[in-house]
Image (tube, rainbow, N blue to C red; front, side):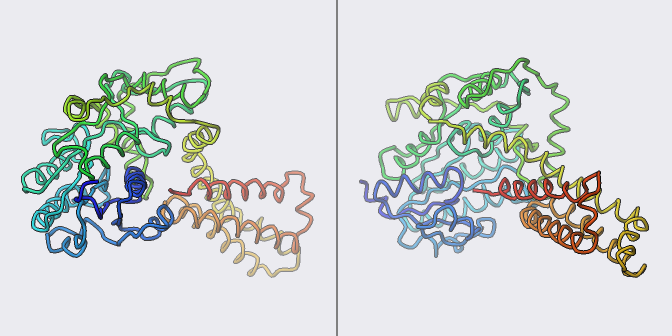
Length: 435
């Protein structure tokens, strides 16, 4: 093992690529420390790894990095974001923080392995790619020992980003929707990315810039079809090629959902990247290692797949429908309560409640329903909103059983129908589990 990899700092340690890199490094006997901005997520994903708290968006000078580099031989940057969540975030994360790290690493004689993206150039059509390219350029100009790896479409057991989008499309029953069917895509398996990162960190891969992509590109339609076969879904009866004009509409809706915390794989940056194609030049990596990245079909055959992967794909496809259903159900329930306050209050008055108390109770719980409908649309609150829906539903059932037990025998079944709503909220809560 190279002396330069006694202790490695992994940025974005609990992300899709970072998690696999951390585990592979530890198998090599390398001491690993992580860096991330969400201590709860890091404790859940990497419970036995030290992950220091730090937000790269606020680490824009070399001085910000010096405390993190003490005793570190190599920094591996697996951190990244697809689209701005606030103004300038991509520039700060992909360029500003990386340039500051490069300056600090140069003075501390720390090597850097940068996980960038295939197609990252200053002339790219998306700020994601341009900011990645600026960060890469800053590293190369810094004088630090730098290896830049630019993977294509990364495919693995986990489902995030492009992999999630492929699985969601593959899970559509009967028909196979495909947008941008002719877009060229070169993929790479997560294990091959991890192998390259670890090789660069421990000195088995010479410093340089490498595209991690298979030799031959495939059309996006072929990639979706291969994913469907791999997951074991039935062949589609119809392939529906989505018109290009629909994509900006879908992307705009996904961007709006992004402001509410939902990280849809259909956001405008993802669509723009797909339009440009996901391609690179495999020659440099093949020359340095003497081997090629395995082609898509061979790589997929190497990954075991089971019922849980099909279920995960179906649940990802159903997630927007489930959340929309809960929102509409609870909003309609609250709206009807306000609209029919007199009729609802009479049920309580028959049970002996005063007119004022009856109306106040109906109005209060109607606004609780509306508040929960709104809360479930905001991703950071959605899980708790689902549990609150369960709690409020149980309050309704228990209270109605005590005050108006005759509702259980109502031919329209208003009490019985609350139970499926409880189950849907519990299922949604589990579906909202992150990594």
